[in-house]
Length: 192
Image (cartoon, rainbow, N blue to C red; front, side, top):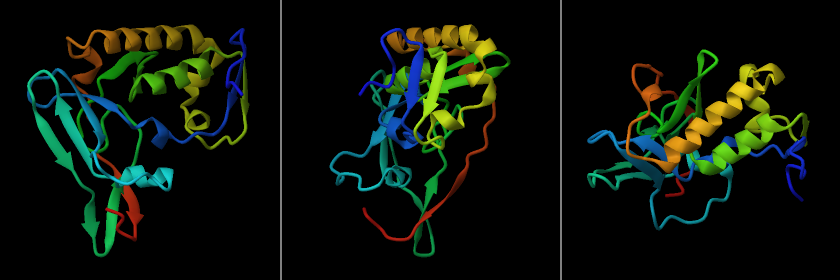
């Protein structure tokens, strides 16, 4: 069953969590400022729960300069400390997201194209229904969901699509903002 009808007027939010949109994450390379990608480290077992993605080891690679970095969850006693998702920075490496742009005095950001698709379908709809309202779309800031902002937000999503299509230049919104790195979740058994 489709989440949006043929006319784009109705959107059904199935309550999908933000964790479903974290593979891949496009970020600004810390070495050359080109577009790099953050993905779960290859060779890991399949996820059993979406929340495991907050603790899953990751790898950052840049196709332009060849830079690589690895991330593993910190430990606190016998627990792994995972990241809290959200905001214009990659929560694993603390780097600015590649897909971000100013919109209505705020910063609109996305992890990847699938994330953009979900945002666009929800924002473009004139009728929004929720199966489970606590998913990613149900938690969007009010300024993104406001009907009066629909046109501006859709234009911003268009700019983000253009940034994704042309990875040659660092997005202007990635400069000059400070987002505190947030970690909060504990995971008491070690799956990796």
